[in-house]
Amino acid sequence: MSQAAIIVASSDQSVNAGVEIIRAGGNVVDAAVAAAFATSAGEPSITSLAGGGVMIHRDAVKGGVKIYDLFANAPGLEGTPGPLDFEGIDIYFPEGATTQTFHIGRGAAAVPGTLGGLCAVLEKKGRLPLGEVLAPAIRCLEEGIEVRDYQVACFSYLEGILRLSEFGRNSFLNKKGELLAAGESFSNPALAGTLRDLGGCEPEEVKAWLGENIETPILDAFGPSSCGRITARDLESWKPEFREPLEFSFAGARIFTNPAPSFGGPSIHQTLRLLAEAGVESGPAGSPLRYERLAAVFRSVSELRAEDPDIFDRDNSSELFSSRLRRNLDSPRGEDGEAPTEPRAPGSTAHISVIDADGNAAGITLSHGEGNGFEIPGTGILMNNFLGEEDLFPAGLGNFIPGARLSTMMAPTVIEYSDGAVSVLGSGGANRIRTAIAQVVCGLVMDGLDPSEAIEQGRIHVENGILSAESFAIEGCPESLADALQHADELDEFNSPGLFFGGVHIAHRNTAGELAGGGDFRRNGTVGKTG
Image 1 (cartoon, rainbow, N blue to C red):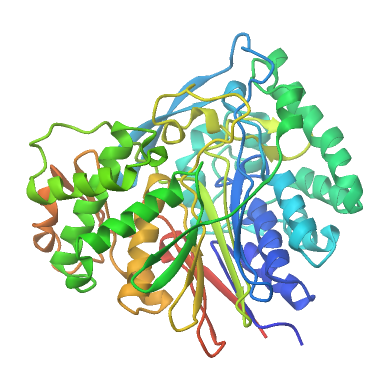
Image 2: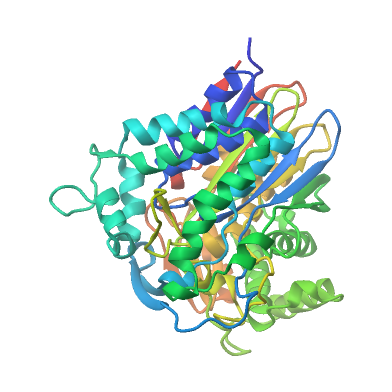
């Protein structure tokens, strides 16, 4: 009999892959990695194997929590490139009636880490052979999946990018030249073949296989000779980083999340610390006081990060955040001028959470930005456009150090409760990752909500003077947000669920070893269970 486990993700393909691997005798890392590969079928426009990711892993036997940083590196170790294929494309997001410019093209690609990173994590912490872990994804990609409303919504956001290349058009358009619709089939036989070849490698052969079959075509298609930035030295220098998590206390629980150079984990740390400082517990979940305190804290963190991109590196960062919160609690919005603008895109990010009855847990967050419009030739893998994402470069596009790990808002998180229960969670949602996770952690830890209840709470987000709110889920909105609006210039109401407020997926084990999962309805949350 297989180990009892919960797998939570945004597609049937990822959840079913995780379930299959647990039933085959795999552990939580095997299941999470299998589910991550299956995002290539279930969320093919949201992420790809030429992006970046972060995994958090809790080992209940040996004890401790570790972070596996699989994110992308900045290219340019061989000097300044020549002419770049780097251009803006406007994408309209109907949820907030807003248009945002992203930069795409071969010069927007950073050094990817997802594929090599997942292989490295599996070798280090997995139990099953690579080929067996890849099998569910290969099957989905080869046989095809039925497109559903969630995939249609994801395709529609990025239609302009998906139409740029022949590969994109062949993959995401039907015979009429329209985006694939619900009920039609999506497949990627080229990627199925790539993964089948990879799965035939012995562990000691994987690095050489990646060099010949992935890195060489990357250099050809995204190197200086093709108006890109990636060089051979950049590819050789990338490696997964194994880190100690950022660990802190909140409301009697221990929180573990992604540390620097990420700004996701540090943002969540400061947000939760300030929420405790602001007395957020004095306002019950869903109350006007709760939303007012959330708005004050979100405003404070957003303003300081926008004003000082290096804020989390400063020795006195906590003091600066606390000072800003005190000022904002006393000062209505507008007295201190406008904060710099932060991006408002829905965020092309996937997350998977897995936990077993022993409390072993793994959470993986993945992204390729919006994709840069081009495939790694012959592989079926769309390349990232991380260098064209403004939210990764608060100091401005192009402001990076060659060879350095790019920062990210990704923040897979583990909670160890005072009674011995454990949760693993994470979210997509670009710069709303920090506020989505913070609100859910408050619900879980402070309010004692179960995973589904914590996810169902209406969310808010504050940036650039705009209070975005899920009016469909907040009782009495907009009147109930009158106090929260002290910390913004205007209210942007969302009358129906969508991708904007993230998608927090939770896998939970209580003190009795009983398992529960919470899949976020905002991003097609899907829960699978074994045992």
